[in-house]
Length: 111
Figure 1 (tube, rainbow, N blue to C red):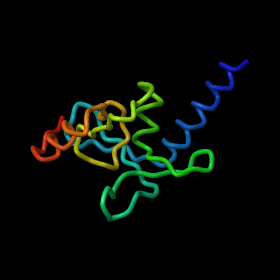
Figure 2: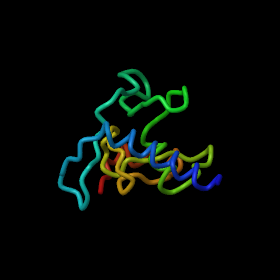
Figure 3: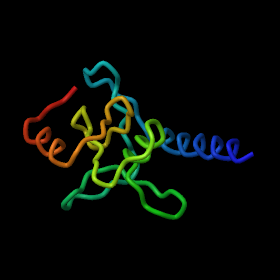
């Protein structure tokens, strides 16, 4: 029974996310899934997709990464390979160290 409840919860989360996504071809192998809901604003660390989940505000790209690939260790970050912070396509997300994420940002690396 626990497995069925978890599967329903996973489907509910995925449906909630994709109800707020526009799929846009931006020249990569796969299209960006652009979050159209709220974001973290313009300040330091701003511009990332946010949603309410179980009464808490969470980063949508991290929820999507966890949903597809599993646990994110505390010292790891999720990088957007397409360089678009509002993209939640799991194909465009990769777990990296903070140092690697900063290096990619500075070099403008993309898919």
